[in-house]
Image (tube, rainbow, N blue to C red; front, side):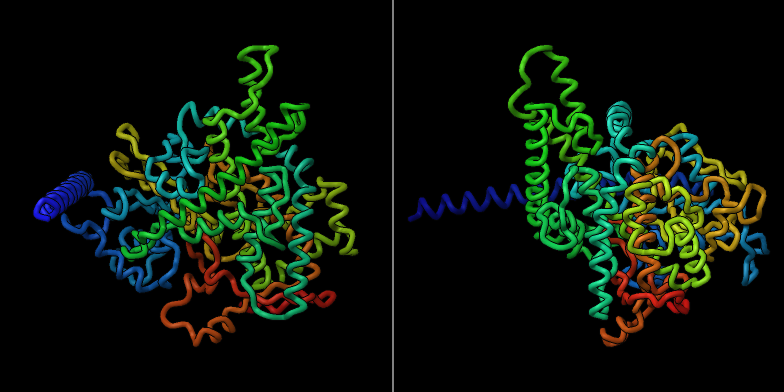
Amino acid sequence: MDTLTLTAGLTTARLATAGLAVFASALVYFVVKGYRARRVFYRLRAQGMPMPPWSPLLGHLLSIPPITSTLPADAQQPDTFSALTHTHSPPSTSPSNSPHPDPDPAWDGALYLDMYPFATPMLVLCSPHLAVQACQTFDLVKPPILHAFFNPLAGGPNLFTMNGAEWKRSRGLFNPGFNPTYVLQEQTGHVVDEAEVYVSVLREHARRGGIFSLDEVTCWYAMDIIGAVTLDARLRSQTGFNALASAMRRQIRWHVLDNEWNLFIRWNPARPFVQWWNNRQMDGYIGDELDKRYAEWRADGAGAASRSVIHLALASYMAGKEGEKPGEPLPERLDADFRRWATVQIRLFLFAGHDSTSSTICYCFYLLHKHPAALARLMAEHDEVFGTDLETTAAKIRASPHLLNALPYTTAVIKEALRLFPPASAMRGGDPSVVLTGASGKSYPTTGTNIWVLHSAVHRHPSWVQPDAFIPERWLAAPGDPLYPPKGGWRPFEHGPRNCLGQTLAMLDVKVTLALVVREMEVRGAYDEWDALRGGRKGVKEVRGERAYQTQAGGAHPADGFPCRVSFREEGKVGDGEK
């Protein structure tokens, strides 16, 4: 008994020693990393760089609560940092003591922020002039900090986080599948198929007459579209359960977001297990699809002419294998490393392809209902291009996809919705050799920082005419017109070599959706009813006067999932423009 007691005591001691060693190592890591972050700001402060009042112990963390108190609790983080930038680097040509500063189109909109331990040192950019330099002129690399966001969703290094030769090879592989002509001619049918299901879902809600989450319904719709384009297969998640779609949506719900300040939620011990299960579901589903396509291809070359994402990935693999030993039979199974790589890229396309598109569709409906004149003009354009028989619109789009290119005002509405409510922002890594220059002439070093380009702020920079107003006509204006967009001012899909590969598909998705919905049904927000059903919303509930402000759920989505009602439109009626 004494021996057992002694052994147990030694084991406990060893475990305690090991635990202390781990704790000490973690503490040292935390302190060293914090010291390095603070050292960056000692240097920046000495150079007179713009930033809030700074504490060597807490950095700029104390500057956050005064800003968040003016915003809804679930507002997206870019709104917090945009407000912070306006507070500590105000756009003004008036005297500094003026209570109402005039907007300055040359406002740099740059701010350095020390958010350690929640983030690495950041340079926040809110102006088109600086955004162009970071993402186009210098084409700065994607920083490692992005892995923490994308890895749980994609499962590993992906096209969005890659750099250098690896990124160029992967981008080149997938470019043909997103060629604008190919997307229009070959993918429009897939989009219309899923859009018809979406219309039937909305019709059912119109018959029931109740409040529902438009964002939730639209996410499943967009997931089915990108599933068809990516896997060349119908997921049917709009009307039933699909393991892949459900696992991806669940992964997004469990994803820890950058604006999560609650440490108990941020470090929820259950999250790794849930994410592991979701990863297993997604990887297994996609792996099975890869194996099926490979078996077909190996047997008779099936799908060799297709440019779906899954077939493009297989084409790369087949080209490599056929060149190794010409004439010899192909391996019976896909190489495990390639299978893993392809699975990650497919997961990325599924996430990015559905997340931003669904949000954009919701905001198009939201803005059109608020602006009846724009809705009337859009409906008239659809009547002119597709005819007034609504039942034939889908068939006409299938037969003649080029008709979607004859919708300049519809395109302008979509672009304006993306300007006011962009689904994401851009992040780049600083470089010791790169110094950005503001329109004011001031220099902004990037050493030791990650550069966050806030698209929502860039899109409302003072260089825009009436930056907070919904004006689709600005996208029809000619150069020289005051409404004409500022250079580099519109970047929902980014610009330069790292622009969004799927932007043509996203625009196609939204055009088809509007063409099949707006003339038949009226989609209107029901926030007042929603708030009343929940006992009345307490605290701040708007951002820039918008109840449908953006929250983070993967990308940016309408608050509370955009509670709405749908009704069948009376002939000729376009709504009253209420919120």
